[in-house]
Image 1 (cartoon, rainbow, N blue to C red):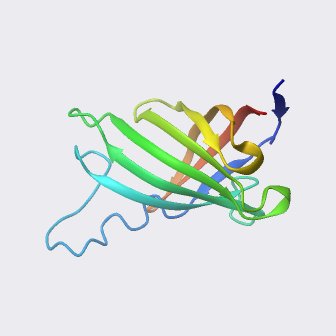
Image 2 (cartoon, rainbow, N blue to C red):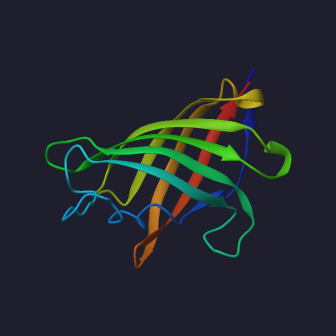
Length: 146
């Protein structure tokens, strides 16, 4: 029987999500989330709340690709890696298509490592605000594991 895991209010502070989009070594080339085929590598802080002073619980690392010709959908393949607390060193794998025009998106939890090896469920992601080149988003997890 699956146990329910409640990690209440785990949220993400995305500090690298947009910060370096235009730091390409290609001359006269800028990048954004509206160009079909563009792929981004992300490495974001995972904190207990949306405050930048909140305790760090891990990292969100992976790939984002603009996956539709109309530039509306993003393909995500992420890993949450916990770096503190009782889940230190454990990962959760995420896979999704995100529709950029939606206020809240759901992404699938498709597995993990150690005690989260058979984790399933979903995560809701909501952009809270943008500050310059940075996006602050809220990430709330709803999952079970065996």
